[in-house]
Amino acid sequence: MSERIGAWAVVIPGERYETERLFHHDTLELTGLNGGPRPGPGDPVLVVCDEQPPLVVALGRVTTTDGSGERDPDDPQSGPVESGALAVRYTRQVFDAPVPADRLTLDGPVTPVDPALYAELAERIGPAPKRRDWLVSLYLPIEAVSSAEAVRLFWSYLQELGPRELPTFVSPSGDELAMQTFVLGVEASQDPEGDD
Image (cartoon, rainbow, N blue to C red; front, side):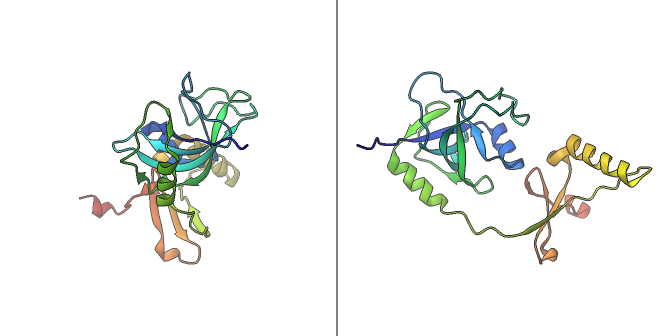
């Protein structure tokens, strides 16, 4: 007899949503599992941003961790990952095009979800589009005494300033004229005359 797998909604605060949009992660640590119903390995998950209405930003499956992970520096609320802790392994991310979930009622950081509602929202998200090649670049004028020092300063600036302050340029491979500028993970105009 096969055991029914329940569906779940995992809520992430706006700050964590911004981090997930800025940096690629394969998994999301599950927190707030004190008492009450709790998902198990293999259960399907809606990752939801705590907006009104809630926004589904990813789909995933619950998995257990091996305890080898360290504290996530991008998540101020995370601690060292313990062996056997639960996480969500992303199966589909839609951080740049979240899906409103008006009918989803949340009750804390982790909420059971009716499987029919889960299926409806997962269908609205749809399958992942085909991957393609992109050219991503960052131009930094750096004053240094040697090329090696310039490279060291480049990585220091990158680490210090990161995506919150440095504009990144991206275009489809083979179509450089379609280049777009991104800051904070969203398209941004770099035209100084357009700021008026």
